[in-house]
Amino acid sequence: MLDVSQLRFRYPDASHSINARRGFDFSFRLGRGECLGVTGPSGCGKSTLLSLLAGFLTPESGRVQWQGEDLLQRPPWERPMTSVFQEHNLFDHLTVHDNLALGLHPGMKLSKSSRKKIPHILHEVGLEGMEKRYPTELSGGQRQRVAVARALLRRTPLLLLDEPFTGLDTETRKGLQDLLLDQKASGATMLLVSHDPGDVRILADRTLELTA
Image 1: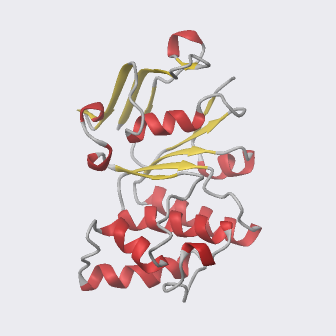
Image 2 (image 1 turned 180 degrees about the vertical axis):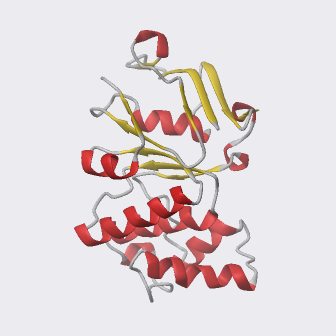
């Protein structure tokens, strides 16, 4: 169970604030295998919410618990979640294979069974045979698929997805949606930020609509 209660954050310039007491209700619970769709206009705090949960931003107040444990006391790398942000966050000096391997192990020291997972997940996201390419040799949509593949490889119980289908054609989009539905069926808990109502309708069990 993910339990988020009265999570508040204010940017240094005070241009906007995430505050459950002032119109943004960031008090929600998500059970195993559930997906929360987070929607709203640009600047309303969708990506900021994911950054707070991932530990990339520090809230002013509030609570984030997973299975009863306070996640705010843990650094980002120790939280039981994987994030996919719009910026991809791939390492340009590493091949696709090594970017995925780094997601599995910080030193890329993989067991035989782990190594076998990489070509399999690349096939699943439509990038079969691209292990030796570098991110700079890929299109924006292909880089996005590598980022999603890396997240799925880690098999964390929580997935934070910020516009994961950006730049994808219809067929690839449908394939990734099916992969995420499989993850849900296996018990993964997800937060999905998307401007596309169709993505939210397919994947989300509930919706949190934010306003600017």
